[in-house]
Amino acid sequence: MKERILTFEVGRRPDVEVRIASGSVHVAEGSEGTVHVSISATNPDKLLVEQFRDHIQIGEEGRLRGSYRIRLEVPAGTDVSTAVASGNVDVRGPVGDFSARSASGDVDLTYAGGRTEIKVASGDVTVRQVDGDTRVVSASGDVKIKDASGDCSVVTASGDIDVGTVSGGLNVKTASGGVLVKRFDGDALIAKSVSGRLDLRITPGRRVDLDIRTLSGKVDLPSPSDSPTPADGPEVQLRAKSVSGNIIIRRAE
Image (cartoon, rainbow, N blue to C red):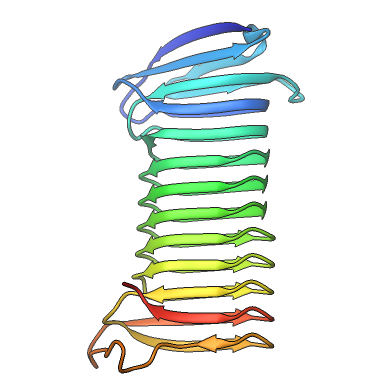
């Protein structure tokens, strides 16, 4: 395996786009004003790398078919977009806007300050912190989001959804997986599941406007005496729907 190393000078808000068939993409924080690209492959020179002002494009011409291991060192706040047919994407540096598409592979994002959009066919998605709006779609794989400040939408077909703290609106939908929301601090939560359990926990001190529907599942609500809510507390709209899964509503700890 050979390595190809390139360095580009960029302005205050660069963006990097990666498009490969298979391999892996790793993004780390680098120096301001510089994007460092490392490509490891049997023939790394076959991969096209171009710069258009502050935009850096890395990808194969025509049909995707090669396997590459790409490591990027980018300034904090760089917009990053990846498309990998088969392979993992690991983003450790603080990026701006982030998007990822993968047919088969995991996506792991540490921090994005802008909008985040992730779509995978088969693979797990882990997001530690996002400040902008977030949208995740997964056909088969678990989705875990630790902290989301903006509006958040998560859709899975057969994976579990695990959400930590959400400050904006939240819309989660799964066919056969379970949903766990550990602390919802927004104003509108919509959760739907066909056969998985919905476990939704609301920040204490909130008045909850409930709309719960289930065909054969059980509903478990907190006792009013367990956590009294002030009459003038902020209101949250909660809509939960399940066909055969249980629905559990709790006050977050």
